[in-house]
Amino acid sequence: MHAWEAIQKTLNHIEDHISEETQVEELAEIAMLSPFYYQRLFTRLVKKPVREYIKLRRLARACCVLREKENRILDVAVEYGFCSHETFTRSFKDAYGITPAQYRKRPIGLDHFDKPDLLLNYVMIDEGVPLVSDGLVLEMNRKTLEEPISFMGKKGNYPFVHGKMLGERPGVSPSIEIWNGFIQVLQEIPHLSGGRQIGVCYKGDAPEGHTSYFAGVEVESGRESPRFASWRLPAREYVVCGFEAEDFEQLAPAALGKAMKYTRLWLKKHGLIADGFFPELYYPSSPDTAYMELWIPFKQRDE
Image (cartoon, rainbow, N blue to C red; front, side, top):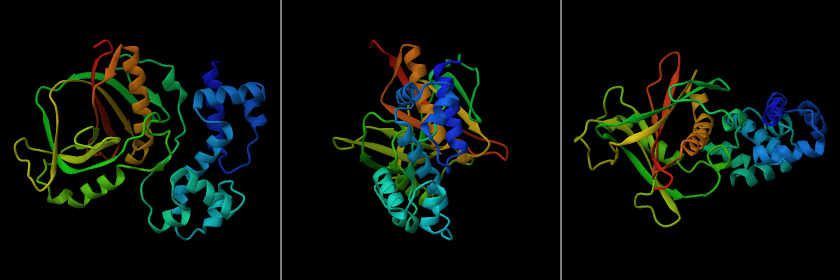
């Protein structure tokens, strides 16, 4: 068994027993490692110490229950392994910058530290070959876009944080307010029937230390209106990471974080690097599956 497989077994165990008191010694035994080496290897692969990881996963799961206002905050805290209301509130605020009570009053979008699938760090797939990860089907392809695609919607700026990727940086989601603003005006936009929606992070006219983010829907080229922000997906070659799941809740944001990390690894293994902007294309869901794509413009690493 590979080292990453041993750690993955304990990640699965933690998730299955998230509300129970879990000892490091128990996890080390599952991984067939000494407690010392287990903790060292866990931190190296997961990028968080064991105890901190468990706390962040408990908080992520607790957020879903907090929306149900019939549950007292204390009951939610105890259910997910926190010994008191105060401990839960302090941990929640440290992770997300707001208290559980504030979140319950106004349940804004939050980014969580997601359960990683370490397989994605060690398995390299060929183009056009599907890879299954925790119920997610992921596939890599290169595509050349012959004509630009036009979108209209909402645009905003938010502070850019280096280092941590989506799924590794708990806190208030910086793009959710832009998406909410877009959804409010979606029916006013003369978009294509069955048109794709897009979320894209790019430099744009954002001030220093910030990035621009656009959320929009596909429109006919040349039909852009000054009432709304517009953005075009340029004609060029892309690496496209397509992924599907049983429903949209499985796709975003956890699956998006996985796809981003895997795409970064895939590009590196092929001597490529991302080139400037990061579009997420969302396709209309069918009754059976939800599907989206991450389109990455790229260039050779030595350019």
